Image (cartoon, rainbow, N blue to C red; front, side, top):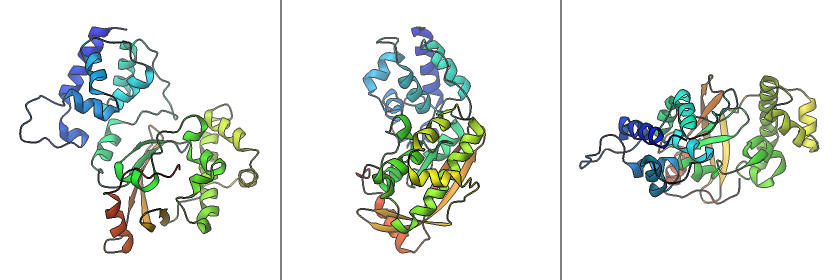
Length: 278
């Protein structure tokens, strides 16, 4: 671990970022060049004291998880992220289709969607990044570990995962999730994390039947119906933006202006993270 170089690298990247780059307001009294330390800490999901000690070349060696969080908070490119890991005394994360690293460009798009339900998904259906309205709509989906990180796995193993959709719509979602997993399985191979999820889901009859049907190319419905415990049923359009280099997809949920769902979506902005375990 090169503490001095790590600290200098973090400082220069922090000072190079402007508040507008990460969706923050500049304010009238800002004197700091770039972002403040506490702002980077908040963006990275850690305490300002912990981040400050790293930038001041003090404290313990940061873990891989902490370095990954800092890389996201500072909107680092893949090359910059790898450099950060090496200076932190760790091997560089594996690149490829299962990368959990959200590109700076995608993060800038998400930063500008702060008032809109939006989330970045991996090829395996893992939620890598969410806006606050997205958490209000469907809950914090970034907190799961293991196979449960994949929405496909939770859909077939955890009944709570289905609470966000009306029951009549479940068969279509089951087909869509299974077809998406097959795409990942074909792309990554049977010895990949996608293959592990397929093996783990094989004993579940509904999944086994859909998997044996070999459906591919199942598309999302034009209007997605979603249930929320406080505002009720919403009919939302789901726009997608694909980052082919990272094999990640940005989902953005919108409602027709003037509709009941539009009003409910506005109301979600005043609610906290959905409590349901989905």
